[in-house]
Image (cartoon, rainbow, N blue to C red; front, side):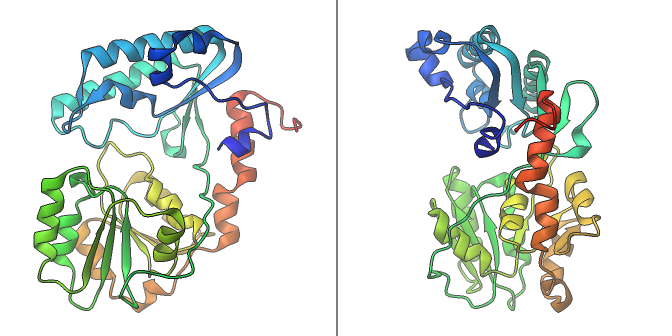
Length: 315
């Protein structure tokens, strides 16, 4: 989004919470018309269960206060209702309350789903498409396969897909491991399946793009209430590859758009996995012009102008 914002204003790097801790004066060197905050809420959470740390929470509140002091308008991008890795119901409620508090602090709240706009300070701005260089070679040994990309973590529900996957369908699961026990569980389930390839660790962007673009489609198996828009949807659309996803309000909205093919929503993981053998679904790929009309730079620019209160004639 930075490149798009540069068409509207002079964009400067803003001190991170870490910089604020060690060099607090760095944040007060100038005033800003707009300060954009992304994922700042993650500062308050610690540990594998996503527990809120009181010390981290105090730092977050201090950082938000300082951001308000130096900005005319504070803009927060709300990506989730609560972080994925928060496990307990009490923890989820507390986390949501914290995010609601951050929203009340901000002047402008950006959401990447039009279904989350509730009037007032919330504005819909499409998630920008990813720019991808594609590697010349593909390390995957399968000719035909589907792909899951991102953290190998319990919220992704990968173990269900591995259990249900029929022998004639191949699946590549790639991403960094945050939960070693969960990865070992997936590894154990895939041990006797020659059609499942686990690729733990970070992939460089060109290799990930090659694996994704050569696949029959990208699977998104999680549809929990914490998620607003999965970055995996946008990653797949950036490469014009099909999306097979468990139904969420956003994916239902997206799949209903007649301009856009190749977006397939299912009620549960079982029906999703069963559908992967359908040759009719495999032939549909998202049309690039339709993708650009929904998520390209121009529509994102116009929505940003609306959110920021900038005239459409500007730049």
